[in-house]
Length: 297
Image: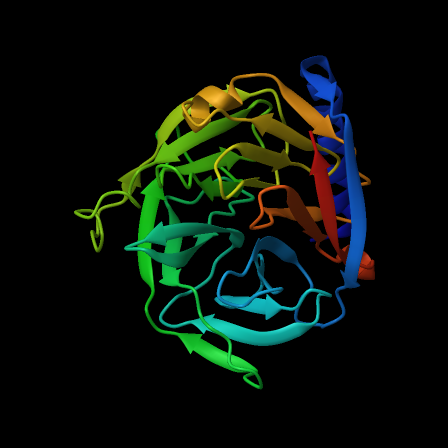
């Protein structure tokens, strides 16, 4: 991302921040801990992250546009352990990664959803079982990849944020550049008949939120907390298990105290549902760190 583009992103995000103040309360408390510094040159534009289930104390991360179809396993202090390529996949702009349980097994979903110019005819989600790392492996291939294409009902959109509701397996996608971001849903992860279909899935527009320039989102493993972030803020919703995600997002949120990172584009809950992590791209050679927040209600 160019220097001009990065500065413009920050200015626009600050505009969104000022708008959001009219709708927000301040979260009572949160505690941040620095876990490690991102050092490996392959990890320049980290845009998505989730904690690993099969590989304890590790994280899955990926870059956005400019990289090949790779995900990376890093340890608890942000050291690169192994690079995994998605076999048969061509990456355009990976922007987010999420969890879903299929057939009783943990799978990862990577979203090739970035569209800075708003011209893509469709976006693509890649689904595959979580790899199990063998110590000493530096580069591996993921061969069991299922891909799902999708289209927006209201024209192309740039997006960097989605998650999968652990209670329903519904995918929730949030646009980036709309002045009030759009929220879409998709049920193709629930639909066994859709697997392997060549027909793009039509996303459903569900709502708009008074946020701007959203760069990441996640839902807790127990389905009771939702986080959405942009470059300058993190927003938190509580969800009753009886509520749908869309209903929860239409309620009031709180803002979590947050010190902005150089270009924060990833957020992920821990498996315990009570803490979360952030990590940043490294624009202009700035340092990036893996942070953990303890969320206190």
